[in-house]
Length: 83
Length: 221
Image (cartoon, rainbow over all chains, first blue to last red; front, side, top):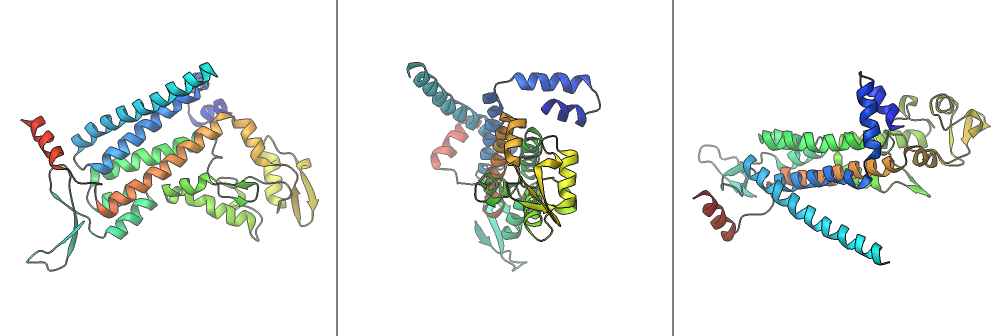
């Protein structure tokens, strides 16, 4: 389904087919990374006005968010290991 | 938020204070700005002259919403309140504004007198449930265009047709994990737009503490 969608939407045939095949192999958890980046960016931009401060705060929030979610993931993996 | 008056212009202005340099941010009409930011993410900030943030919000939130639509095969944004298929994620998706509005229109059309979505298009139309009546034209269009639906999936109930299956099951089977990933992207875009609406209404969240100001001045010296 995804392969046919991508092939229909772009003019070059081979590139979208290759991309879709690669995307299909990516574990679903990695699709959360752009969402982490988005949340960090929006949080930073709604707390600051200056572009430089927004960029700095976005990195700050991304590190915090990644760290907290990473700890949660580690805890879940540990629980799964011992369960 | 604070009200200020200019000696030469007695009209009160609503301003917020920038947490970065303490400058005033003219919010103009905050309610209108908030409504614009809900309707089109970032448009309220652009109305207020905060172009960088407006373009940032517009690109980020609309881009994420559209990415979610694409990942979910165009099926993840729909409005449904039927028992057994109450689409709770739409409550979050609606936060993205007018891009989610077609789902409401399609739902009203499909469940109303017309018994088919607007222009007979399945775009953002809710999935059919077992026993649902639809127009003959929409049933024929689905049978012709949807690979999971045949003409035999409808009972003939003149002047309508009655669906026999559960269309959402077809979507889950065909899209697999992409249905959930697309739903997540569109939901998050809608939820984060709530923060953008607040930013348009009241300016940046929070004010710097003395400790923040001290650490910032230490960084610059």
